Length: 214
Image 1 (cartoon, rainbow, N blue to C red):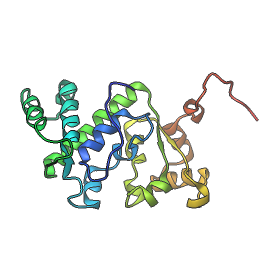
Image 2 (image 1 turned 180 degrees about the vertical axis):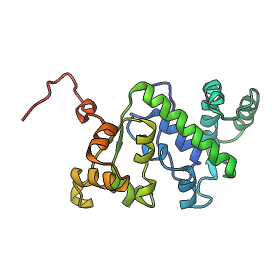
Image 3 (image 1 turned 180 degrees about the horizontal axis):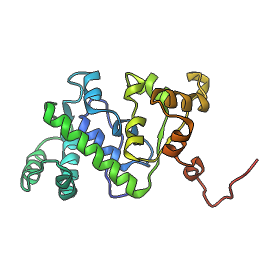
């Protein structure tokens, strides 16, 4: 899980920062929702909110692109060989919190989808499991409707994902409710859902402990 940079960040930071920082999935605070949420949906929720980020964040993005330039180019992301280094030199002249700006046009949205796929591919290779909390994501995570929930992308791409619940006393939901919500929303029958999710015991902590059968 190390070697894929990332950390949680402010909502005003740009969408590609979220995608980059999701690459460190498995660490506390990783924005797993944004690895599956469509970029056009994320950007449309608050127009203009993602167009600005501090220079320090942009430097992180440039460093990321330099580090993974070959792999990103192989996936179809356009990265010039010299431009990132030149941009980093210019950014280093700015204060850490000085703002930088970039518009979100169709090309950038398309590129973000590729970057999502790149990160998810790395996660699959490492066997990382993503926890999803559908009701919580819908009510407080900024996902506008269940059909946009990241679980769809995770299942379609073969990413290992666990359906979980969050604060059932506040959200008035249970684990079975969460499973039913995903199954109904994506029209998955029981067998298909089990096949997509896999054995939940494989995701537990302390795998060395024997499985308890009641």
